[in-house]
Length: 479
Image 1 (tube, rainbow, N blue to C red):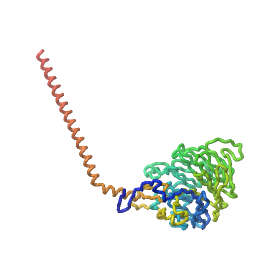
Image 2: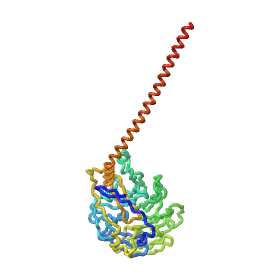
Image 3: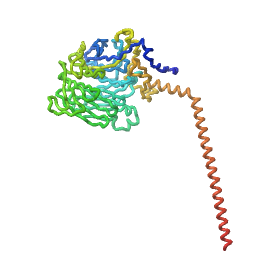
Image 4: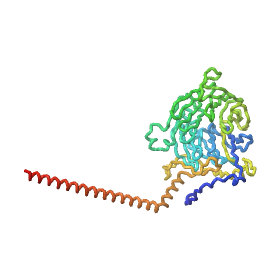
């Protein structure tokens, strides 16, 4: 089905091909590791997780911690902070196939952490002021901005179903935000607080936040400079477990089975903490810490988990990226990041076409993936936009397996609905006439019923009057 309009065209996805039809195409799902640094003039390194081959170096990146992310499978985004000018910052976009920055955005204030929902339809950013910003990716529109914390936002993460946004801050708070509440103007105005929960048990800056699976029943794990990690229940909004570590924890990674989580510390160790089992304080680390491993000579700054083969990837201030087998706790691979300490690690699953033995970093192969980048992110909300009340983000054709995710913005969807309404005027009128006809028929039936009831009542009254008259006449004659 193809629908044409003056504004756009929606084309139905072609049916899946059987293996014989796809014999000339060899799609391989690969995992790549992205690593960034905060050093001015730094780069983003990109390696194949399983072969160790380096693909590209994305240039001109000086990202803060939690400031690097892939947006869907379309492009890479990173926030930028310049130490020489704390009052300015930017958000940069790179396509997967090119090393140079292609889109630059300049928000109203410096942005530190970034987060994107799973389809990549919108981006959230945490400001130094404590505000959180929410942008629509396809148009760059600033959809919402709200006061989230008293001090700078340090980390952001979306829940598994993208309905919740969890933030950590320098003020020590971890807060849970429902996007349904954020976009519901009536409820948000009536509510005392916009957040669902505010966890304030940390006494110092929150360094990292992760969320598990299970939707509204998920657990949240937060780390802080107070040397603790805390486990929270999203459904009950309470503290489940408090774990004290020998050193400050800057990063955490959750085991997919959620039996343990890994905590990277400033003393160079990666601690293993139990989530579901009890442990005594007789071990050398303390309650709930069941072990550690590391070969880092300096602080562990970032962690990521690859579910494909149960690999843990760590970055450090020594500029190295290490890949660990979590069973044996041995290093299986190492990547060297040439520019300064590593402060962000991501594991991204991507589909690559190897039918012509073309390498990942050859642009001829990457052009197939349609990396058309969106416009820059808006600095301020456009209050004069006639469709500013259309806040719903809609993604069509956003199959996560596809390397080319297509989007339609809320404005386009609104215009499309209006056009369909205009085109369907005749049909709507006919339906309205049918409805009026049916209402008229029901009214006539009711009138006939009332007539019948009135006739029966009239006959009853006449009969009663006649019977009463006859009875009186008989009584008079008897007398």
